[in-house]
Length: 281
Image (cartoon, rainbow, N blue to C red; front, side, top):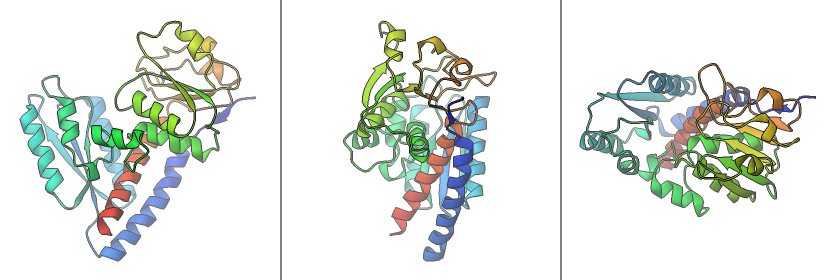
């Protein structure tokens, strides 16, 4: 019998219905114009452009507006900071997303941290991460926050479980580990220097693949009955985990595609709606 499918695509559609209602209520209360999610894309990376377009479409489906700022590949850190400052000062913009990655000449962390905390709906600022890690109110990084929403939606028990996160990026692996810790899991973070990775992965009752390498985590490493969450996506429709051989013996899994990806976008939109609601109080 196959494991439970953690269907992010279906749940994202459910969330959008709720969010559309909340946007309608917000506009009725304020009599104002729809809130805006602004996205900044530096350069012409095709995958990034696709992600930005998908986020814009999601905004329109719930009644929000999107503002897409496209900057050339040769943009400097100073020029990008100026663009972020303009969006911070725009009262209709309730969320700001700087599409990752940016060209190498740009100081990405400085630019992330320039985003106003109340508009950091993608959860990328150092301040937002710190607040989240300290169990203070903050918008969590969209992908791990989306994973937590999905686990909750399907009733996955987290407290007391042994969770293993493979990957330590500042906008995925690290916040994912902190969120699981905040939900009372016992958490191990694995990375390129981890010894005996297969043995560590084999202990996981909840496994999150966030390493960015196609099918890097092998099926034979994964214990029976594990909850398998794959945050990767690569050409050919595969993730970071060798998933097919595990489906029949895991407790639950996120499909690739259709698992984590839709939840990332839905969470980004949900956090923008929340930011707009707070601003209207």
